[in-house]
Amino acid sequence: MGCNQSKQYQEALALFVPLNDLSAYQPKRIISIELLKKLYRKKIMFFHPDRSQLTGLDEDYLSNQFKRYTDAFQYLLKYCEKPTFTKVTKTPPAYSKKQKNETFYYHGEVPNIILRLAEYLFYRGIIHWQELIEALCWQTRNRPRLGQIGIDLGYFTPDKVKMLMEECYYKEKIGTAAVRLNFIDNYQLFVLLGRQKQMDLPIGRYFTMTKKINESRLNHYNQQLQEHNRQMKKHEKSGK
Image (cartoon, rainbow, N blue to C red; front, side, top):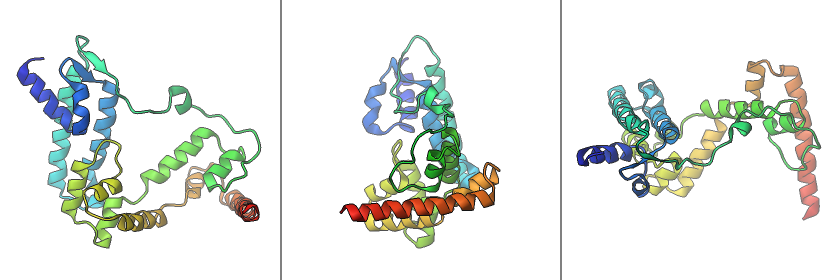
């Protein structure tokens, strides 16, 4: 990798990796394809032009950013694929393939703790592990975006949301970045997260929508869950 190529490589990589991590990826030590793809998907999720209405950002701006990150990704990818360089596999902890594909059913007693619906269904052996993960992912995908809620509440402007997307570190949550950049304080973040939680789609809808559980059975399990949690709260009080 020549001098100019090295500079281009670092500039392209800086779009995906926080500045304090760049030293790990010097010439002849390149980022792994797996990690590069994860970083690219994270950025593209924010900057896809289809998200214009959701984020309140200008579609032309999103298109330009989308192209900018795609060009940088393709530039980096050609170096990742060269076997003459040593690959740095600085990949964040993740589920192993065995865990990711796990579809086991839980067999045992329901834990003596307060549970949420999806957790209760898993510990009752009604859904398997992968279905639990799928339900949580569905709820997360359909969760209102914190940036848009912040705009609605007057905490952010579209320009600030744009800056948050650009300044957010890898794996850093947008709310944390907003506090770090002094756009909001911790109390306002608490308000934002509370509003987001209120707007979450009920996770039970995933199971009825996918026809894994019908409405009647779901209501029955909800009643059982409420009774379970009442007993847990009673137990906690008596233990104090």
